[in-house]
Structures are given as C-alpha cells and as structure tokens.
Length: 162
Image 1 (tube, rainbow, N blue to C red):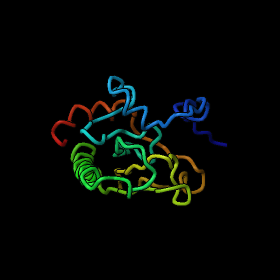
Image 2 (image 1 turned 90 degrees about the horizontal axis):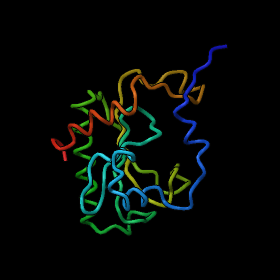
Image 3 (image 1 turned 180 degrees about the vertical axis):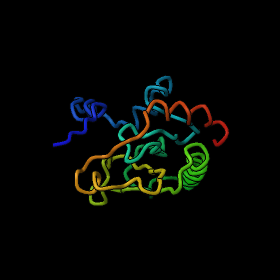
Image 4 (image 1 turned 120 degrees about the vertical axis):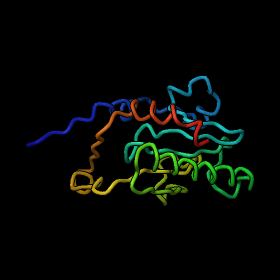
C-alpha cells in the first residue's frame, strides 16, 4: 500500500475552532498579513491565499464587511471585489503560468460553503492534468510546490497587479 503524507494539514484538522470569523480576524489584524498570507488590501476588501487550497496559488477575495449574502454588499464594494478578481486572474496567469482559472462563490452551506458566515470569491489557478485519480477517488490533493514559496512569489509581484 502506498501512503501520501500531508503534514501541513495537521494544523487545519487539529486546531481548536475559535468562535470568531476567520475572515474578520484578518480584517482586524493587518499587521499579521504575512502570517495570514494577505497579498493586497483595499478600503473595503482584501486578497488572500487560501491556507488549505484546492490547487497551488488558490486565492480568495473577501469583503471586510461580515455578511453571508451578496445582497448586503454596497455596489461599490461588489465592483471593487470584482475588479480584484480580475486583477488576481491576470496575476495567476502571468506569475504562476496558470493555463486556466476557476472563479466562484459558494454561498451558504447548501452550495458548499466551508465558511458560510462570510462571503468570499475563490480564484483558482488550473493546469492541464492537475486533477487525477488521487483527487477523484482518494479525496487527496498533491501540491508540487511549497505554499510559502508561492506566497513569496505572488507578494513580490502583487503591486504590479493591484
């Protein structure tokens, strides 16, 4: 039997779940941007790397406002987030050489939201052949690059895109 170890996920599955919104915690602690892997902030939202990504370089665009539905967002915030998604897409194509991009929101639990209390966009870089049997039948993902290396590369170039 073959084994695939993913020790970086230990923190995710064993951490005590705090009774605080993880995204609001990021909003309130801008001095911890490196720890939280924040790439860019605007007045109303921010771009952050997903710590538990579907694919390497998986970004999220998150409003500062704590809400679980898009209807609560002022149009200005919605448009700002949409522009950040556009810029994040360009950055992933150019810096990580993404061959494709998935963009989406999972609003509420029925739609698959992992953090349903605070809406957020997902911007996922994709490559031909990046999904294989291990994801399909093993419920496991393999990442060919280190999270911190990707963060460093994206952070160094973020000012060119945002």
